[in-house]
Length: 209
Image (cartoon, rainbow, N blue to C red; front, side, top):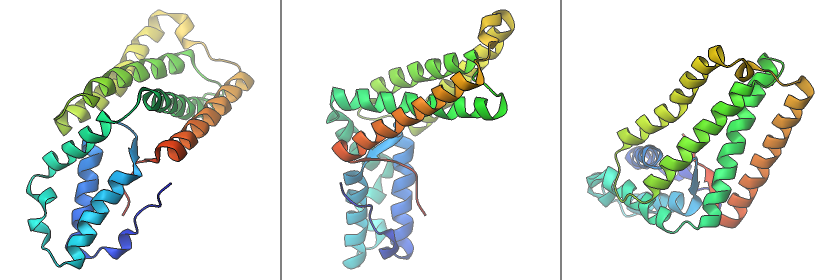
């Protein structure tokens, strides 16, 4: 497992360039996860330029940042195995259920049936979108943002409507059962992330300052 790059070594424009690439990768990467070797790759490019005193505006990545990030993500997605995709799906679904059921346990004193159905709908939308986008060599960051917005918003709108029509969707599970469900999904998300981290050298991609 590789360690995270020491970005404190980057100064001024080089640090800004590194953060700009990070932000662009976040827009182009539909998954919550990213391999550490991509992070290391962009760090090495910028750090080498800093050491050699190459102006950031002359870097290849700065000439067309979207194209650069698209290429990195596409090359990575092309190498992802089916097993890794399944593990990523398990992680995404379990962390989603854990987060929303935890909110229900804290504020509703029990998990709502509508919450579970919403999580399933979001996961289905995410899986379909992620599968399609993995095979696209170029894609618009705006399209990805709209997809994420729709994947999350539409299921909530559907369930808000259906809860008023179908009483069973408004059922709340007992507190103990709800707590067990939350803990189980939390453990599954932790274990699946541990496997992805150790075997595939992935990490949760959140921009650092």
